[in-house]
Length: 119
Image (cartoon, rainbow, N blue to C red):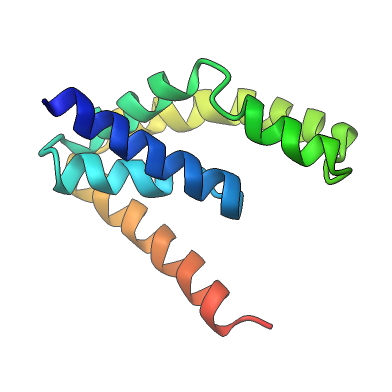
């Protein structure tokens, strides 16, 4: 039965990703920690494993067909993600879980404040 809960969580993350362009990690990581009892490290690793297949392919195709994709920019961003994700993972696994949770929380608060208070 937990498998269906994981599928529902993935579905919700997919809707948010397609609708808002946010990374599913901002939805999935907190849910895995607080609803499924995973550690912060395990939740982050699990999300990265879920993203390995082309999870955004259908959403990308819809945006591309609508003329809303800059492929050149996407390629350079992808290169940065490729390199930066290794550095970030290397740093993350060496941090204590509580510090990692706090860093993640501050990041989410910063994003929320920018969205609510920005122009």
